[in-house]
Length: 123
Figure 1 (cartoon, rainbow, N blue to C red):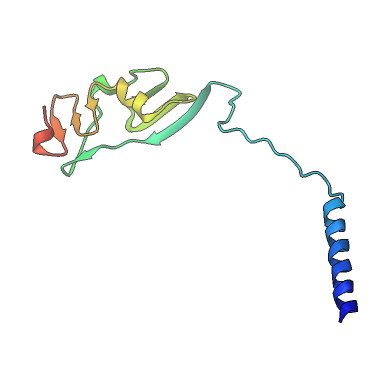
Figure 2: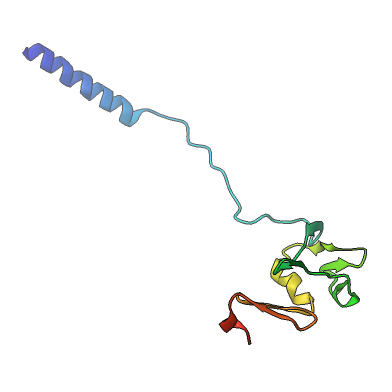
């Protein structure tokens, strides 16, 4: 029995020694960027755009909504498409170009109509 325990102990020591001093290849390192690095600041992106409130699809065919910025805009030919020409443009940037106000609670249309989430929210 002592021989079995001694043999087991020797095996454990050898395996431990092998694992500790085993030379393994260095792990490959990868570099990840958290944000893409564009080669240009201009892009050509199109996004669908529709606002529906109280079962009414809002109409953006009036000239006051068109081509308000060179970076992000809608055109008369199709006011349901937002054209983005600059890297980093957000929906907030787009809404700031329109003659309307959009908050967390309310939408004030270009015609001055105020639509809010609740009666007490309106100004």
